[in-house]
Amino acid sequence: MSASPLRIAVAGANGRMGRMLIEAVTQANDCVLAGALGLPGSPELGQDAAAFLGRASGVLITADLHQGLAHADVLIDFTRPEGTLAHLAVCRELGVKAVIGTTGFSDEQKAQIAEHGLHIALVMAPNMSVGVNVVLRLLDMAARALNEGFDIEIVEAHHRHKVDAPSGTALAMGEVVASALGRNLKECAVYGREGVTGERDPSTIGFATVRGGDIVGDHTVLFAGTGERIEIAHKSSSRATYAQGSLRAARFLSGQSVGLFGMDQVLGLG
Image (cartoon, rainbow, N blue to C red; front, side, top):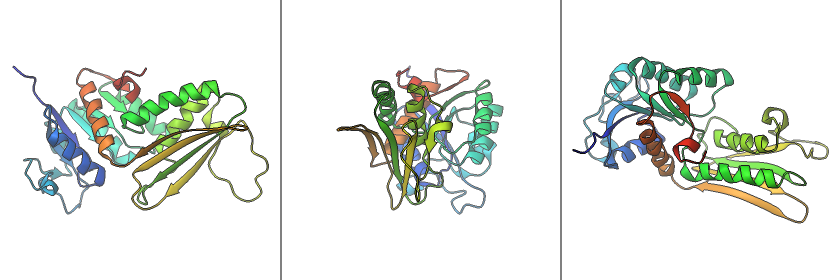
């Protein structure tokens, strides 16, 4: 007998990423859509979650968290920090696992998520792309080898609708590089330059942010030395990469009972 399909609920079901996730879930032969969460007052409430695909899933978009999560094994959430925390509280109550792709959490909010991880299994990553997580490993290797004589700058670009900056992925890249160099990112990060800034402090890690159009997500880490430059970059052309990575994370969670995991563990990178 074949295993039962993984029952997945999607938060932000009427948003760009939510729709990409719903499409990915409905196309996966080992997953089934079990819930779709929308914002209170959204005009899509009560509609079939797959209506935008021209077919019926039998799952209606709801703002009732208990209703939307009642039949799910795993929630995939790419929303806003406050919304995600509200969703996790209900997930914990119902014993639903969660994949968290939301970014912009404060340290206090991250501590709340870690506490939830003592009771349910969670995967949280600033970027669910398989390629980005491979890049994070490459950055660790590069930073350790280029620990002298190289200035480090991180440039990221996203669509005009993104509300946080720098992106969670850029910050994760900065954390990996800083850790490899034995630095504290909070102490060495420079997030903006204007006017007479003086000579660059070689111990800093610089960030530059671009927002415009429909850019899905571009990230470049520049190691600039004397006579040579090394760039490690990742460019996303579709949110489908995040959706497929999220499904891999959901499948990973099916074998976990409690704990807070990262995509490096999902992918067996560390």
